[in-house]
Amino acid sequence: MRRLSLRVLDALVLLWTVTTLTFALIHLAPGDPASLLIAPTATAAELARQRTLLGLDAPLLVQYGRWMSALLHGDLGVSLASSRPVAVIIAEALPVSLLLGATSLALSFVFGVLLGGWQALRATSRNDTLLTVLTTTAYAAPTFWLSLALVTLVTSGAARFGVPLWMRLPAFGIREPAALATGFEVWRDVFRHAVLPVLVLSLPGAAGVARFARRAILDAANAPHVQAAAARGLSRGRIEIRYVLRTALSPLVVLFGLMLPGVIAGSVFVEQIFAWPGLGRAMMSAIASRDYPVVLGLALMYASVVIVANLAADLLVIQLDPRRRDAASDQSADDRVGAVA
Amino acid sequence: MTGLHAINADRDVNDSGTRALRIAAILLAVLAVGAIVLPSLNGGAPTRIDDVMATRLVSPFSRDQLGHWHLLGTDAFGRDILARLWLAARISLGVGVAGSLLAAALGIALGAIAAWRGGIVDRLILAIGDGLLAIPRLVLLLVIASLWGPGLPVVVVVLGLTGWMAIMRLVRSDVLGVRVLPFVEGATALGVSSQRVLWRHVLPNAMGSATVAITLGVGNAIVLESGLSFLGLGIQPPAASWGNMIAGGREWLLIAPWIALVPGVLLIATVVACTVIGDALQQRGARAR
Image (tube, rainbow over all chains, first blue to last red; front, side, top):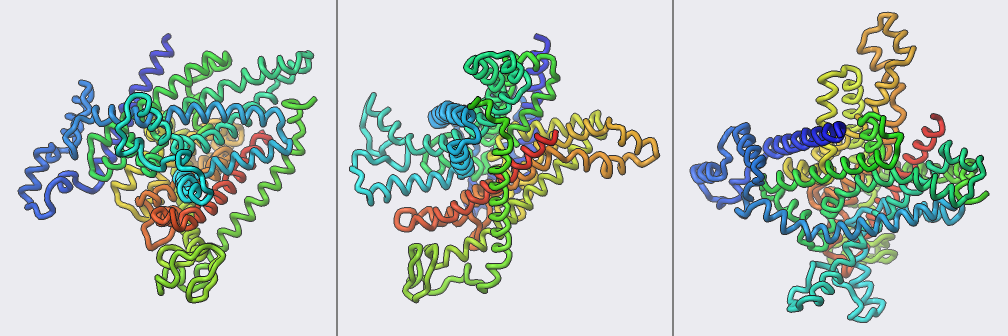
């Protein structure tokens, strides 16, 4: 219990560090949001008035203090560009991104672990080598390139191969522009639009998970306690499930924790290309208009998700793996980094 | 027995691993040499725009109206895609290598200092590293690159600034391990200065795991550069990078898909080669341990 509260305290300090770093980062950057909001012909006095209006004329430390104290009261501030509350902007975009992210994370993990496990069972066979080549390639493919390739396939490709119209998939957007559909029809429409973006996110995702799962299972199979179990004459099925998969579970849990933030952050390119109105697009437009409160709010949200996911994964691993219960928290942090690298 | 217990057949892994490593190394070498040599040979042709109407949007393996043959076709301005790919390889490979070397230098220096000095310096470096790790790297890249304005130097610096944390942690924990070994104690006892012990005796022995991270970092940096360039936040046209070539082909996707798709194939091949080399180094390291 004491360790848990220490970890939570650590997480809070980390969150504060992140927000402060982000604040410094974007306020030290060149560019002025006020000048983007007024006419290019505006006089210096008008610019100054706009800056006062937005509170940008105060010293940086004062601005930081204001933002921090509002944040501690649960207020993320108001967008400079659209004057809408940042919390509302995030609340609108979040479910749209989650729809893509959560679906593709689930698909990536299920198919990745199955594929990696299947490969590990026949490691060094020809099929294993072939799949390793395929997964390495899919994992290396940038999502924006994959998106364009799939769009080509479902548009001009589908036309060339004479795919009937009702089977073709929409290449952009989240709904048909003129759709007057209701209820179930809406979901069907959104589903059709989500197929391509989800596919683009899941292919490299599943490939990455498969590579990792194969390695983790093989490492677990080479562990001394597995060899000892084999020497004791336990059956193969029992060894594989009770000893190998059990040991391989903790690195997979850590990986899941690492991938969880990708649910909301991984789709910047995909949202740009498929005109999917989620957090990635909100981020891009906020950056372009120097909308400090929105960028800060989004960074804060991303960081909280990363920190909470890591914390949850660490705690879960401690539950799963008794050896970790005595280990210093530093070790799990280094494992994390190893997995990223 | 078969299945999981057959993996002790380490020889097989070794053989196919070595072959993959060889192919990857050859591919990267060819790309590097081609990128350095080939663009200088055809004298500015990759960026020159001639008779656009006669040469634009030629599909792969065919001739333009002036009778020139193009292996990979031409883009919307009539520029030969193969020639531009080599020119772009210069920037994409160069930025990838430079960016990850910068990240490596930062990570090694900060990791060594953190472990060697300990105390408040250590805490501070770790806190900044953890803070940066807590924001997805892509988000960090987007924020910095777009706020400071696009361009080649910014991309390299940004890749360095957002890529050092993992290397820092690896070097730090290795230095902590090496600093208690007898030969370090011996050097200190002989009166070698603390600085010199760190840089000459400890650090060279604490680079094992960092090497792998750096190799994998090159592939990562190349993808990130192409992503930034794709969004218009990286290398700016008319300079060519694989990422902005893909971006430039995006609006022609329906009538000339090769413009956007061909550069990606080379990009993927390069990243796969980096991954294969990183994996091989990692396994070699694991076996040596």
